[in-house]
Length: 239
Image (cartoon, rainbow, N blue to C red; front, side):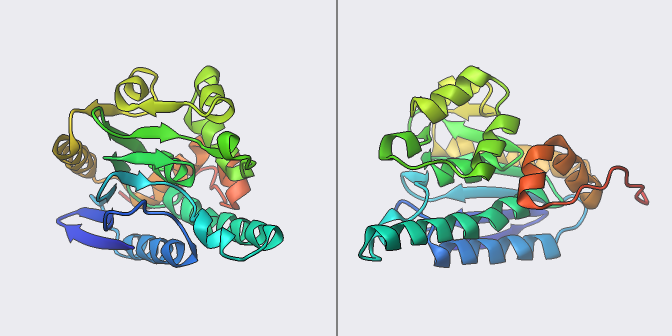
């Protein structure tokens, strides 16, 4: 499952265990609950780091749980259910009143890649792990909010094409070179240290959380609209 640790002004959300950290209704519910807790406890100077134990950041939706329905129709219904349940998670990240950092120390695939990409900054390791959208390889279409996220988060159309239409598995050094991640480091410890350093430096700016969230939503208008997030055209906050 996942845990939440408060370390000074930093919230550390961790997918625990050595499994693939796949998302089923229980995991999605836990994740959404923890993000709600982060939002409720946010103060100026807060920042979120999302990380994982083991070889995987997350390998996406729990397809075994979907197929356990026992029929093709049942599996499809369960998959659609997970897609619907996961949408508020992305909405929660987009409206979180603080900077967010994904510390990617293992593979991030499909919905796992989407979760990472929903953070403001992505830090990745060079020696292990790939970013991968598996849908084209396993004959699944891509939800509308996934597509909107890729359109607005990855500016290079050829990179989007390679991820979504080629099923490219991109390692950390290439992801850094092509602007998908903020930086890539040699190992797990370096990734976590760099993520904490970045989050702490961002937190020191002590930005107004509501304003920060509104600017973020305005930066990604198509995604915000699909997620049902309202964006205030102009907000005056007390400093």
